[in-house]
Amino acid sequence: MKQSARQVVVIGAGPAGLTAAYELVKLGAGVSVLEKDSIVGGLARTARYKGYSFDMGGHRFFTKVPEVEKMWREVLGDAFLRRPRLSRIYYDGVYFDYPLKPWNALSRLGPYEAVRVVLSYIKWQVRPHTVEESFEHWVTNRFGRRLFLRFFRSYTEKVWGVPCTELRAEWAAQRIKDLSLRSAIMAMLFTPRRTIKTLIEEFDYPRLGPGMMWETVAAKVAEKSGAVRLDAPVLAVHHAGGRVTGVTIDAGDGRTETVTGTDFVSTMPVTELIAKLHPKAPGEVLDAATWLSYRSFLTVCLIVERAELFPDNWIYIHDPDVHVGRIQNYKNWSSEMVPDATKTGLGLEYFCDEGDALWNRPDDELVDMAKRELEKIGLARAAEVSDGCVFRMPKAYPVYDSVYAQHLESVKAHLATFENLQTIGRNGLHRYNNQDHAMVTGMLAARNIMFGEHNDVWSVNTDQEYHEEILEEQPALVDER
Image (cartoon, rainbow, N blue to C red):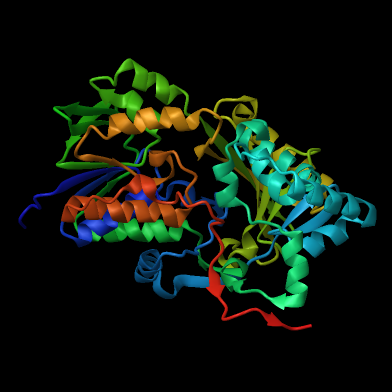
């Protein structure tokens, strides 16, 4: 068979990298995917232990992008389940709906605190922060300070490990649904011009977890003569004359190998990419890259000797008295993830920094801690947990701190000097993308290579809106009093 003129090296086998590879092989390119781990899917992998399946973070399959939806259906067909969404916030012994619903939140807080919340909301509507620079500013302007303190500060600082004053407002705009007490009251009197469709109330999910999607994509890439190489971490990225010429990988058994190509697509963290350039990047670029930081997490997976525990897909734990940040109930995502119907599989997520005390804590101690915290919250007794394991996910969340933007611009400008290199995906762009946004960057990168287009992958997911809302225009306000 004639070799394609385009030989593309894709670094990383997560949603972005595998989507790029899938599109490229369909268009006739030769593709080599290099993955440092022994499993594909990146953050959207399905981890497995003794027949149980675990989703690292909870990956709903919903999108506003028709091309992404088309690829999902093309790859998995009828292997998707339609699942109802139920998620709640646990705080101070009380459960609240999430996304927050005004009347639910106020009623669960009790009359005294509800009045204080409303007064705080009114105050910040009258005298808001004039410039929204931080996460705290953005949330306070829309929710009032009382709700910020109740529902957002503790959990957000658990996730990011920094004060809310140091996180940028653009992260909040994309990740948090607005709560408007004024809108809630108006909705009782009028039919709104714009209504939210049911997209956020239900979602699709592969029977065997998100990894089912990416394992199938990897197999389809291989069927088209693409190569997906696991346990192949990149050691160096070689370049000359404004072009990347090849990447050196650890081939195992003390061997290295250099993989060459005409084009290169990287999903590795941009900090690692800059550090692995050979010859080295200029000093100011290397310095800028060191200012970009990440938050990691680990999931303590527990097998509980009870058929039913709680109805939620996941629960956000805002209570500062426990370390756990979020709890996934995998049986409520897909019953096929739990092989024994008399048991339940849970994932307790702990946010940390790679290499810190929590990250380095022995697995058995983490399992014991998770069991105690599960009991403290009241979801199950520690004695009901029969087994557990731990999965660690480094560099899961690019941090939007107060200095990231200026340093990312320096890194971005240097990477733009390589005419045959594109960075895509969450870590390749240092952007808190959803899975579908990562896929879009992979699709655009493939089009740039094969069709000579000039799509700007850096512009994907820069809109300042809540990611899960799809609005329908209504013909007019109708008075329904």
